[in-house]
Image 1 (tube, one colour):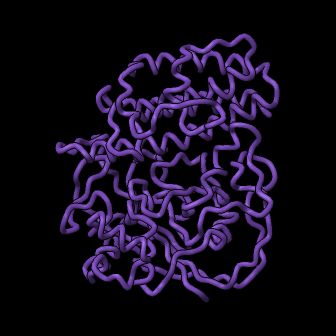
Image 2: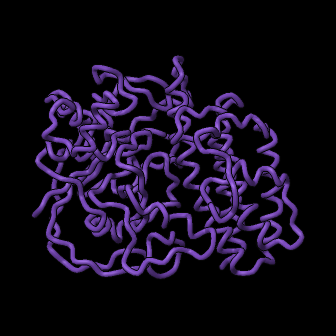
Image 3: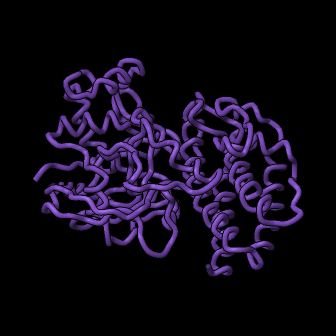
Amino acid sequence: MDREALSLRYARVRARTEALAAPLSPEDAMVQSMPDASPAKWHLAHTTWFFEEFVLARFDRGHRWRDERWRVLFNSYYEAVGPRHARPARGVLSRPSLDEVRAWRAWVDERVLALVPRAEDAALEAVLLGTHHEEQHQELLLTDVQHGLFSSELHPAYTDRPLEASPGASSATPPVTWAAFDESPVELGHAGDGFAFDNERPRHRALVGAFRLASRLVTNGEYRAFMADRGYERPDLWLADGWAAVQEGGWSAPLYWEVGGERAFGMRGIKEIDPRVPVAHVSHYEADAYARWAGSRLPTEAEWERAARGRPVEGNFVDGGMLATSRATGEGTTQLFGDAWEWTASAYLPYPRFRPLEGALGEYNGKFMSGQMVLRGGSCFSPREHLRATYRNFFPPHARWQVSGIRLARDA
């Protein structure tokens, strides 16, 4: 492994996390608006805990913890590591302070960067995994901050940066076209050089039937038509668990939309909804119901990966600073990466002959392969360098606070 490149990547990723947290006050960074979300301060601390727990404490001889008590506070779900603070109560952790957490980050950074030039291969692999883990938490930090700010009656904005118009923004959204794929055996999953999580392996062969894939994501305007046609009032469109979620949650629109569907809360506060950009913050249940209403279905993850294979990872990511979905442009199949995570029809399950990582890091992905659905492609909150065609994201089907959207598929 190229040690210099790893050090540069480590420094770049850690700096991006700090930049994303910079607009937040200490009070903002303490908010935990629901059990599924975590305070921004906790994300800053947990990603630092990861490097101290899985890199410094294991590979740096003579290392002593900055504060042994923080091992419990900022462990997320690693049973093999030891006890942990209850997830729903992360918002009560007023200590250590935000300043102390940032000082801890700098302290760990200094030691990790000093270790890399002399570390064994296993340590380098752990550092690389930690950077990709932190990129996941960068996106979670933003989605959790958005939910926290939305939960305030003041609906404060995360940023006052104007929303830049996308190319051709005055034009109408291009009409949906359908890319046709013949039935074919395909190779799925990650192979060869480059980083991948264990859940992307092993590469395997699958027979994918003929299908057609929509050229772009479903827009706010198209989703409004579903709402206007009483989409949230028609049980025939919904999976049973989805209909129960609609009734229990009183859903009548995507998360963050105001009644009437004219305005919604985003990272710039409450703004008018642009009907031309992709709808986001919908659950798998809503995506599935919309697809059924539209005479279509959601793609399987194998279909999605076949369509994305060999395509450059280009799109609207956190790197561009838009922090909102953008209008589709260009011809052919667009928006495969960035803008909004795309719900698939596939349950999150292991690939054939899957083997998790050894030890505590084996808890990273494998133990969540139950009750979750796969999403593909990344979002406007995702770092571009974090994504690839084989990347498998997963959330429970009721989740709506992520930047999750809809691409349609049909049988050919």
